[in-house]
Length: 160
Image 1: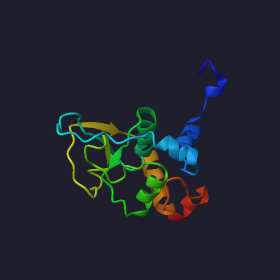
Image 2: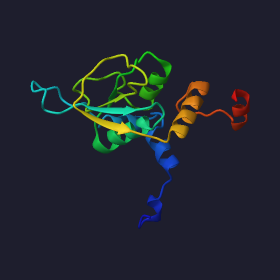
Image 3: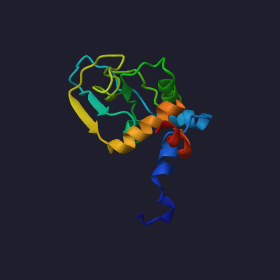
């Protein structure tokens, strides 16, 4: 696939790299290169883009790509007091709870659920995942209370 075999990575490797917890000063310095958009007197300077998806469709991974590749913070309409949203902040998504012009992309799960903050946007990215995979992933998240853990395969029989 790549000319250089050292560049070949699985999707799991990429996800682990992008969504790993921030632990050392080098990573903190790297994250400091990610910036907020500058507020302007002209609200038309950039359009807000909604990243709309059913929960567990991959919006966290897409936000991590946007932040690492494009270099700016993405937001969300979530309640930052909730445990799972705090975990996302600890993974490096510093824009949790932001919906203003400091961010270009704002994640939402509306209309599946209402976010904490109402906001308006001019454009939309609709992220879609196979519903069977999304629902299975959501089931794992609800059962484990975590973004990155799964229940044991044998536990599925208990919930049938």
